[in-house]
Length: 132
Image 1 (tube, rainbow, N blue to C red):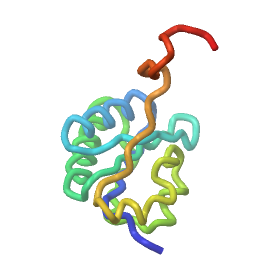
Image 2 (tube, rainbow, N blue to C red):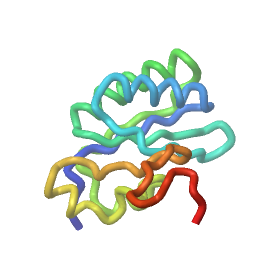
Image 3 (spheres, rainbow, N blue to C red):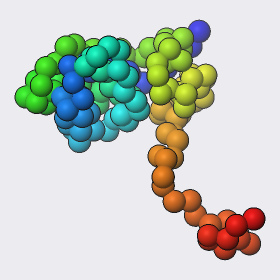
Image 4 (cartoon, helix red, strand yellow):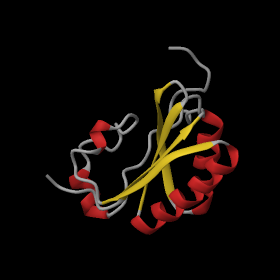
């Protein structure tokens, strides 16, 4: 199986405020994508980051520090070039699943889906707000 050409970072905290602080610090520190979070048990939450290895390492370090300031850091880890079978196991990785071959072509993670609630541009021939 092919390996992804980028890194996966994980930051696990006790409580959502520490997780949000970690994700915010990570995203502001380096060129990474915060793709999803997952609640494993009451209070135990993990955030997933993708990017190049150096950026993910820097982001995870910043996230660890922020999580420790706000709440409780449980663990953090960086997996450089994860095997193609790993991302499909992760929640919120639908945009990454099955794209190991494509990612190897351009060395960048695939684009993320549009966030919910974001207005779409009107299509040609249709007026905005008009019902069909």
